[in-house]
Image (cartoon, rainbow, N blue to C red; front, side):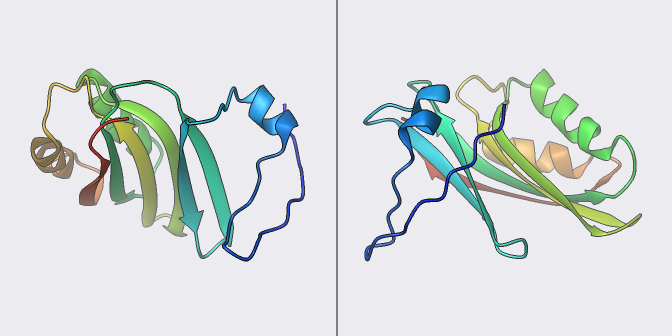
Length: 138
């Protein structure tokens, strides 16, 4: 189901998430949400983070723009206990390069972030990997 609402930004840059959206996504007071801004598309994605004890990281990958490249990355991450909270991928140059920003909970991962970066970089369709911690735990 898709819900569309128009909201006003206040003088401090805040918006109120309409009740119908909060209820449908089970967003409650005190909960954390992840914001992903895609400046080229002028778009913001809001994704709720609902599990206590999460260790959130932003994993940025540039991959070959070929069928199965993203699956190679996400399959590897899944096999090592990385839980993807949000993903946003776009083609940079058709048939050549795509880029993805993955918001990942690494609280149950068998790999530390530095090791994940090294191992992802070894995959055949990966060109670049950057990982940064978003927060220690929710």
